[in-house]
Length: 541
Image 1 (cartoon, helix red, strand yellow):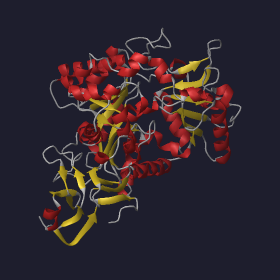
Image 2 (image 1 turned 90 degrees about the vertical axis):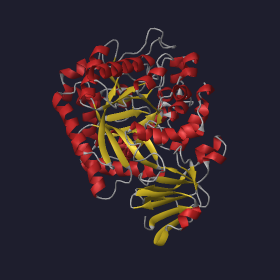
Image 3 (image 1 turned 180 degrees about the horizontal axis):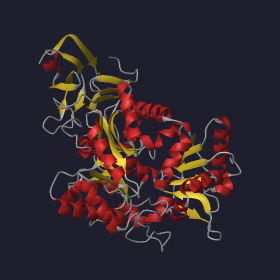
Image 4 (image 1 turned 45 degrees about the horizontal axis):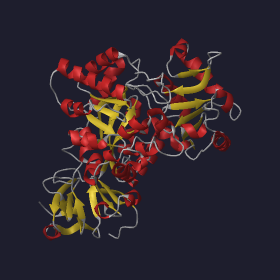
């Protein structure tokens, strides 16, 4: 080994490598890690051209891997009204009115982030009759914090009806007035509306391009060096990432899942295969297909084994009948795809586990690593099945904290106290031997991994302290286990010789501060492939 290009010294390096957990120095050649060891050993490797970074005794970790984000489907929220602070329907309407007035050039008046209980009036979300009084000349689309429910005005409803024709009348997830049968303007998760939203939100690929740049800049600011975008809809989406890379603006690595719509054609599935062949390197890789089996507890759309506590006649429905879902999974599994399925409810989780198990029996053995996303509720009987079937629980710790905020009593009311204690079973998963992977689900939750780690350690106020986990397990969830969930544990997720030089230097040592202080930690330096992509200015090196 010649002289190294970059040397990080005087550090506390937590490598997430069981055979060498701690080190003082890391050396980088090109885009790979070339040395991990002591300061004394590293000194002999530094040459006249070596850039030496003195970490000042600070903690160095592998770069975080966010295994579930929605960059392609949510980049537009950077150009929408922020509805997160709205504590009443009146505040929401004022925010939309201000945003519409400030942006007459927008074809669609968009908003994101409202909490269900905060903006309801008389037990109802604001539909077309309310929103028309604020904006009537352009379509309005207001997305809830969890990305599951949209409130729209009459103009949006008219556009959707004209675009979809008879299919609109058959579409699930459309709230209708019980007396007139007409759509109220409130929509639950509906794949058919997403192309309409894309057309109205963007005037071309440049809007997507600029939005993705903003998202990725925020990611590296929080130490995220790789992420899994679970919302790619077409080849044009993938080309936008490729263009970012060609222009030197792709600062973090991306693994992509193509999104499976309910009425997916054979030609579109063939396009998934084309995408997988075309994008398959260390910067951009397609390897998964994203599906949905149910919704979310807040809106009573998650499929539950037992009725909701506040609606005892409702259990929630699966999006597909189990037999149809089994066939879809079997086909995608036969094609060699990793299946990544949204499921929040315990009945939804069981249907997905059953489908994965049947596909493995029918298609024969291989390394599948199918995943279930969220897994907020799961029957204790089904927890051991994750390890037994090799299924990855891909979970978002910060969702637990969000579920206890003052503006979202809906989650606790829906589940009731006993199920609330069992929700988000992180420790149960770890103790069962499952490879627990963590992520943010941005923009549903903040992309800051330290907030997620803090919640994993404390439950963030959610009942059920028995399901907290320790710091090392939480870090693994955002590093080596997330890499495993992307089939990339040999490339990244730990600081080892030969792996990609993706690392972060932190403001505070997670191992030497209180649990409560973890949420205030931030990266001072983010390195991807040996290149500094973020520097806070606080690191004197």
